[in-house]
Amino acid sequence: MKFLMRKKIFAFLACSAFLILTACEADPNEFGKSDYRTLKSIAFKNQTGSSAVYEETRIVKVTIDVSKAPGSLVLESFDLSSLARLHLVESAIDSMPKDSIALQKLDDSVEVSSKPLKAGDKITLPKTNVFYVATVSESGLHKVWAVHVTLRITGSSSSSVPGSSSSVKPGSSSSSAPVESSSSSIPEGSPQILSVTVNNAEVTISGTNVYIEPDYLTDLSAVTISEIVLSEGAEIQGIQTGSPYDLRRGLQAEVSNDTGSLTYTFKAGVQLPDNEFDDWNGNDLNIPPEYGIIWDNGNMSLAATTKPIAIGDGYGAEMKTGSIIGKIASGSVFTADFNPNEENLLAMAGYTDGNALIDLGKPFTARPEYLEVRFSYEGLGDSCDVYLLLENRTGNKNKDRTNSDVNKLVASAWFRTNDAADDSDPDAVSISEPDPNGMRTLLLKIRYGTPLAGSPALDDGSPLGLAKPSKGIDNSVSQGTGEEDVTHIRLVFASSAKGNLYQGIANATLVVDGFRLIY
Image 1 (cartoon, rainbow, N blue to C red):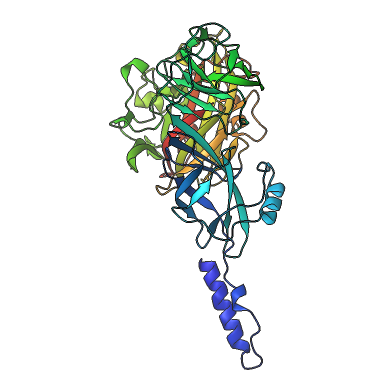
Image 2: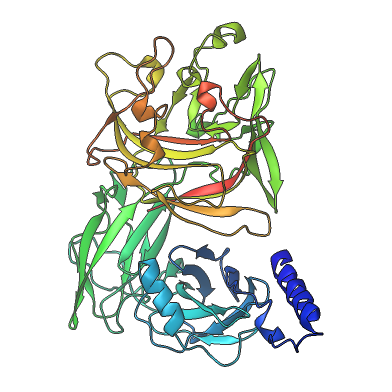
């Protein structure tokens, strides 16, 4: 806005300077018009949680709780760039383009509604459950967004399938658990799975994907489905109720009726305990004893570089780089045991790499596809690290590792930056604008097999470039193919990326409000 104001002042002075010689011919309406058209947030009536706005792909994901499929949605609120307006797109769009040039062409070509949207407006919901809006700048430029709506319908009149044969047909009972509509990508009249029930697990159906999220301690290689609800006249082959299945990699089943068939994929995954970082005991995350120690940090008796911080109605983890015994100490939270060998401060000072003091990684068997993190970062010239490694180990704890044990890298997702808005790392899919609490949403694609060129996973000092230490704990990994079973997860948040080498800038601060694994 300061730049725009300077433009207006400059235009006024220029006209005044030449007023004596000639009339100023510049049209004042051509000056100072904003081109900004960012969509920061959008919300609808009966929405569950906040909308996920992905700037790079121009996709907005919304979940709505309803008793039956609605014909329209009620717009509750939205937040745009200053002076921009929100319009419905009237042009027909099949899908959002993948590359930036095609997106720009779409922006330039679409037609939008004559009247801008406002809170309280009803928006017709197509059968695809996808509609398009455009943010229109003051200068008239368009930016198109695809709004993907997931309907979680509470209750269903469709029949329940408790049977145990490989061909499961509708019965007579009904499920009262919330089910997620799969109509967003399935033509009307097609055979559908309407709901799936697994004891002590949340089940989400999106298109032809059935995602099952049980408790963290559940054995994902033996998940038993207790009930399936199909659309009328449909039957299913390839999976049956009452039998255990290995759902770590996904299992396909065929659903058919007189009109045709659809292939559904069943996959199970878990979230790490307290992935919202809301439950603290002093300066440590408070995890129920039955889960064991999941989270740790680099806090010591003489310094606390990590502590809880209030964010909205909950808490997050604030990691701030400081110093201890004359060395830089990065703030950190990780799935690890810090100093399990109980080295004293004098002995710890003799390590050239702090990672040799940490036993990184915890047991984990799922195969997620994305990592989503809510964060903020003030680096003061430093860089933070957010990374996930999925490993295949022959042993459990690295501190007990023998010469015959092998740690292979199955998958990775790595974000290292000195700018919270910089999504140049190849694993970064998108970074949102800050929400009202100052948190951005980072989406990382988890890469199975060799990391992408340019990924920080390949940098010197990272686990892939780290030789076995001369003393302490060996956290090094060798490259796997990506097809190995996952046995451990290494998830690290650090305010200084080179903190393990005692390099960083004091007061660099990373705040993580929580994260989730997406399957």
